[in-house]
Amino acid sequence: MPLLLILGLVGCESTASPTAPAAPPHPQQLTLEPTPAPAPTPPDPVATPTPGPGPGPTPAPTPSNENPPPFGDWGSNGFTNGGSPVHLCDDFRLGVSCIVLAFGPASATIRVTNNHTDDGPARDVFFTVYKRNLPETFETQTKYTAGSAQGIGLKPRQSAVLTATFPECFAQLDVYVGPEVESAPHAPYKLLGADHVGGPAFCNAASGAGPAPTPQSGPAPTPSPAPAPTPSPAPTPTPSPSPAPAAGPSPAPAPPPSPTAAAVCENTAPSLVVTSTLTPSSVALTATASWHGAGAGSIAWGDAASSTVPKDTPITHTYVRQPADMTVTAALSVNVSGVLCSRQASVSVPKVVPACPAGKAAVISPTITIEGLMARGTFSIAPGCSGIEVSLATYTAPSVAIAYPQSLFESDHQPRALPQKFSAGGPYMLTARIPPCFWQVDLVLGEVIETLTADHLYGSRTLTYRNGGTQSCPAR
Figure 1: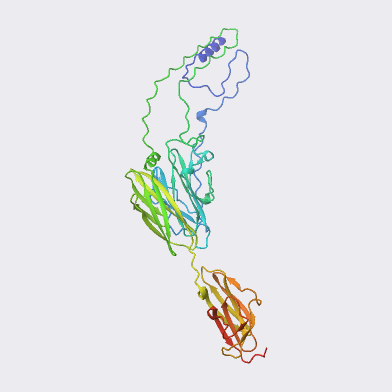
Figure 2 (figure 1 turned 90 degrees about the vertical axis):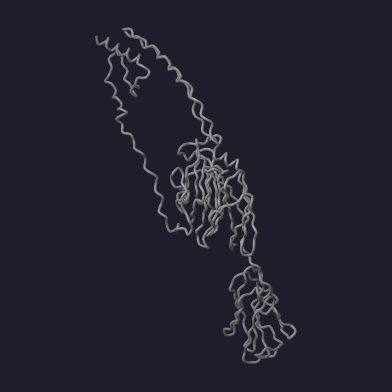
């Protein structure tokens, strides 16, 4: 009787419905021979506690003295992404801040600013777009070069407008202080902010564009017949294979997709040409914007809010020239039925180089002072000047008043040697001894004259002079 009960159980198990619950992970094997004690049953999966969600994102570090609050604007500027504020400009790092100027389905525009004082370092800032090829996996992200932007060598107190365009798949936007990073993540102390954009699918890592392939659907495979059981003293019923479920009706074809934001911008084809006109103190930029269709255009300059721009009509914006080379960027945004299409253009502006004044005007504040038997000549050189020759010479004289001839006593350099050359800056100082008798000291442009006579003087080369002494000089 026990044997029949066991065989009946085996038969029931063999003919179980395909939709019955799955067996435990390690089912015990039934046999007609005596068996040792059964192995412990694995724990009930339902009773196993489900791990909770992982820890939240690490909060951004508190800004240090290295990152002082910027003097310019920064933050989302009211723009939203999926109902939340845009996070591209949440932080300022290494003295750099940014503010969002525009944010749409196909592009985003920001203004970045180097907030250091005039003697601070230059900064490289990158607005990089990365294609997302798998959910939340940095290692599979690839840089989208065509949509990325950068501001190189921003001088202290200098700004640049950067526009990034999005691919037709999921992407990540990162704004950070250089050097450029080809794949995320970035060092937190350099990252100004980040956002996820785009869609409707992840990008294909193999081709660099388009949605990732999905597995093909179809009817489930027919299960293979189970192997015949080992013969036993009593016959064991052979289970009959269950029929494969019939395939359901094919799904209805999806409606054709609507034009993407990238396609709208491709048809709009915005373009921007910027030229510059330099004066000694300013640079005038002339921007001409063009696009197809009836969209509304605006231009954002690096140091001003955006302004409306007519299509194919030049507009001008003026900057004050700086004592260092600078790059000026203009960003065009065209709103086409809610889709923001952007382009940007930059021009390089050389630093202001003042013209050197002619003649004695190149030497500023020439002065002679006498201390005992030593003469000192001090002066500065005007901006824009270089290679200005200046000499200091002392002479024995016939009297305390101006009289000739005068003989060279000493100069700041060896006789018949070329004078020293000076460039913009100062003050500079030259020295020479004076004789213990009537004397004259001359601070002059150019070379020294060994003997001064009424017909052989420095004339217009004289910067300043002094006379003095209390006794006649010995005859030579």
